[in-house]
Structure formats: C-alpha cells, structure tokens
Image (cartoon, rainbow, N blue to C red; front, side, top):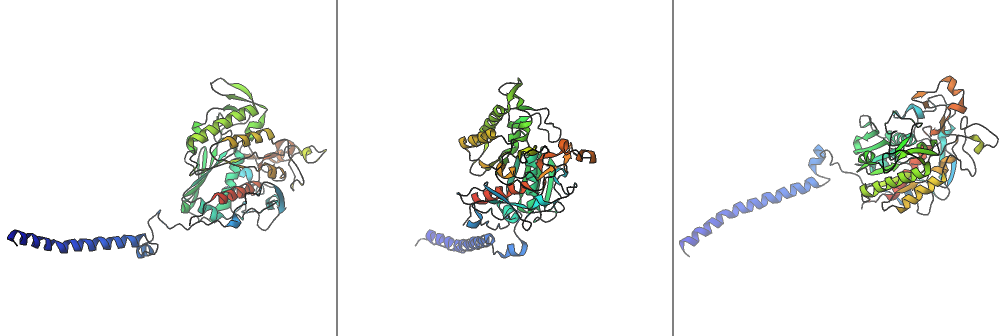
Length: 415
C-alpha cells in the first residue's frame, strides 16, 4: 500500500465519527419533531399548542340527525311545546333589536313562543348550538336580504350565543353588514342588507324607504364583492318587491323604465344567477335561498266576514291556508331559476309553514321609523299593526332549525 493510500484511509477514518454523530443528531431531531406532532407530546401537554393549532374534535353527525331524502320537512303542523321551545329568551339575548322584542315592548301573551314545527313523516333534529358552531369552525355564514332576513340572522345569533363565554363573542356593525364573531371557533355569523339582492337606491343600511324604489336589475357587483369567499350564503328577497305591482328600474342602460314586478324579479334573479356561476366555488361554498316570508294583512282571509289584520291573534291557523300576500308565480320563478343553475342552491321553502302563523307578527309591539309605537298608535292597529315582521323568539327560529338540519345533512364525517 502506498503512502498516499494510507493518508487517504486515515482521513476517511477521521471523518467517520463526524458522520455518525450527524446521523444521530438528525435522527434525534426527527424523533423530537414527530413527538411534537403527536397529540400526546409532553411539550404541548406542558405549554399547550400554538394559537390556531388546537386539536379540533371531529364533528360527527349521526344517522338519526340526518333528515331522510324522502322526508319533506316543509309539510307538517305546529304543535304546542313549552318544554323545548323557545330556544332562548329576550332577557338572555342582548343582540335583539327593539323591533322584534314583542314582550318587552308590551305584548301581553307569550303563546307565540311555544309552538314547534312537526313535519308529517319525520322529525327535525334537535337543535344543538355546540354542534352547529363546530360545523361553522373557521367559517363564515352570511344572511343576505331585507329586514325579515335580519330577523333570521338575529334569531340564529340568539340560538348559539349562550354557549359562548363572555369576552369570546362580539357584535360589530359595519354597514351594510352586522357581524357576530365567535373567537373560540374562529367563526362568524353575518347579515348583509340587500333588500333586492341586486343593487338599488335602497342599499343604505339605515337611510331607505320602500316608497321610493329604483332597482338596477343588471347590477350586483357592489354587493357581490362582499359575498365572495363566504362559506355559507343564505339569500332572501321578497317584501320590498311587493309594495306595488310595478317598479321603477334600469336594465341594460341608465334609462329608468317601469316594469311589472314579476318581470323585474325574473331579470334580477338572472343577474344573481350569473354572479353565482361566475363567483361561487361549489367545492367549498354552500348556497341557500329562503322562500318568501308571508304577511297577514287581512283577517278576512282566515276569518270570513272580519275586517282586521294580525293584531290580537294568539293561535296558529288550523287546516289548509294560503294567503294572498304570497305570490305563487314568484315562488315558481325562484324554483325554476335554481333548477337551471350549474351551482347547487338549496331552496328552503318556509312559506307554507309560516302561513299558519298569523299569531307571531310584531303587530303593534314593534317599531316604526326606528321608534316604538306610541300609545295612540297602538290603539289604532288597523293602521299601525306590523303584520310583516316576526317577534323573537318565534317563527324565524324554526327557519333556522331547518337550515341547521340541512347543514347536518350535507356535513361529511371525517374518518
């Protein structure tokens, strides 16, 4: 062996311990990292996980909680239930506006709070606020529409807020939005004011009137930018369209024309549908559309010979009933538009079940122009009773029970 070869062997032998030590260090580091990833890591047990990396318990939806495809939850009846309903009280939910707190505003009876919707051929799953918040973890749910839709937003906030500790929840007003944030779940339940869904001169969250309506039937971008990326969108639009049988609108040009309401509604729906198909990611976003919320403006519709409205009504309508305030043509129009969409939209047909509830409106126990009715106004219910909006707790809670049932139905259990 030459002297040069001996020198090379010695250099290789001297490097061997260094290489072995490096392998030991790398191996140890790998073991430490693997341990850190483990749920049983002593480091996490001692110090807790970094913010945003808390272990998330799996949300498991049992077969009993999933409504069957064959069951129509919208066909049924109202049953008296003062055990499980209401889900909350006015006193324990600080997020209700004065417009809907009927008892606090002087309504003498409370029966309207204790009716539960019972489908004919199945049961709605019991509402579980914790399970809903687990499903909403890391997500945004947004209600889009008019003040009736705002009532549904407030209802859902009240249905979940009791399980959220103080200091971990907040309500922000960022017109045209209201945002209920739940820090513990990195989630939000939101409301966006858009009474026609498309743009209009009534889009200011507080300064608007139904008496002056001008709708931009082909414009939606100003609203749509606020809806982009929202995980669950719940749309509704009806009452503002129905003030008169015609409406002023623009379409294709800045020239204002008078349209038949059903024609204008169809054009607005088409604009909304085009936005959905260009903006919604069906892999990660869910879209719902609420059918029209009925009114009870004329008592002769359910009580022949009478000439009143919803004032002083304390019980639901029994038997078959469909009021003239609900436009079947628009209902069918919405259904047909949704059927033609490439993006899946779930239609929640709450109209018929709400038709029976002549007893549950705010009547004279709400607001007009931001103020509670005076004693004189309350004594004139024929002119001042509000038979459009709903008391809370009340009917919108049932709408949210049905929304919750559909969220459970579409939830994928992770194995």
